[in-house]
Image 1: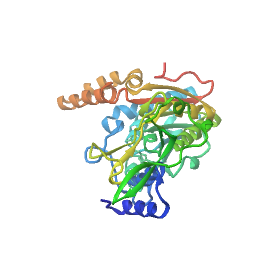
Image 2 (image 1 turned 90 degrees about the vertical axis):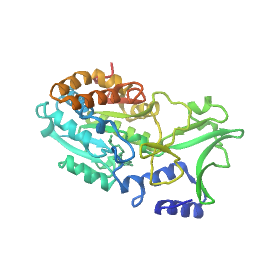
Image 3 (image 1 turned 30 degrees about the vertical axis):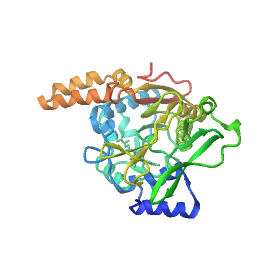
Length: 358
Ligand code: SAH
């Protein structure tokens, strides 16, 4: 049965307006200003619902910091510049990246650290680790300067629109509330205009689902447009597929376990796999160049995670050495985060291919 303030709010909305689009359900579940999942908690780590790469090991943020350092030097060391992160979680990645960037002379002094973050709880966590940061609600608010940006597990949290094909065509997925429960339903009327179908929709058969994320594409395009006009570079890291493909990838995670996305909105993390082909296309239309995506394991190995782990092991006791091995395995092994997670690079057109994308 429906319980919780957000569930009541959504149930009431559906009562007033009829079923709501899945994208709206997802946006409310995660981002409702008062009761949304991210607004009310720090979901990260063993005590929370899920663990991300920067929380697994400092090596992750350090290598990203060094990658950004290389790109900053390759761009002629612009100063001042914006060092931005979308959805920085606890601020761990940026704290580790900044520590590594201190090895790049002049870089940290020239950086204005900008976080795009909506959650007040996570902003407070970020302030603890990166007190010099400046916070923004949206990408639009960032100063118009060269932009060096990273987003890890940010795009998977942005709302998706889902369609399913049945006998009568493609129908958008909505969410209804019946007998005290939220249930996914299909819009009764099929999409009328076949000319607007995506290439994947054209080749998908009856019973298949297809997802698009207009919010994700708009943000990727805006990042790209800034990099194209002001210079800079970007890294988008997330789990998802390299090529657009049919499939229902909406998932909910709570206490490190999968749960029903429609059971308790606002109480579980809702995500969908990132379509890197769609993001690459958005980057191209923003005017910059996409690179990859490459598998996270391949990317981190190319950046020298093996040598970094070796160096850390040299200064560690036996139990820390074991933790470093476990973390290395977790970040790079194909059976763990190494191949489902992918990395998309962004550079201005005409720039040389960045490290890790050979
Ligand atoms: N990058 C971090 C956290 C990933 S969780 C890490 O790797 O550990 C997703 C992050 O995106 C959280 O910080 C969440 O509050 C933020 N977020 C989610 N939706 C957002 C939105 N629409 N605008 C800004 N931040 C958002």
